[in-house]
Length: 219
Image 1 (cartoon, rainbow, N blue to C red):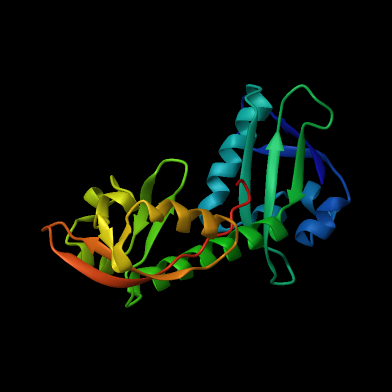
Image 2 (image 1 turned 45 degrees about the vertical axis):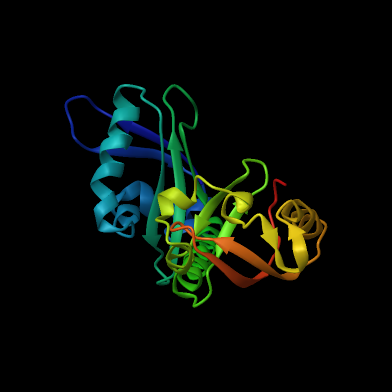
């Protein structure tokens, strides 16, 4: 929805001199209703954001200071929606409001998914670490990994697989094989191996390890 704001310096009220028909689809308010009384539109913006929006709208109308904000709102139908509102002075029209509800829902779903992942990892009975091949260090670890290795998280994240591996592995293999298993994992394999680790107290222990490559859009 496109709109045009006007404000007089001697009045607190910001007037809407024009608004396109897109406001009906966005908020369920007709352009005529919105222009007659902007409170019809502001009434469905969540309360904590109304005063901030009014202040920014007045600023852009009086001083020309541009602004952009995302506003949560409830349409007349009761549907919860999000609108991205931006405005700039000395333009006709000088503002635009865009329905970004779908984008916000995608962001919320992504955040919830990340939180579920974090909860699962933090409360897993297994020791779980996340290794970054480029840096050569672990970049995350759950509490059980820290407990198993007798290292606090800050210490563990300074290390990599070779740093916590015993020099001699089961079957007389050497710890240099860790690079071989990492390469297999990067190629899509999911090797399950027995591996000897050395904890922070210098005690060696035999563990079963499963290596899995995590998906990444940038790598």
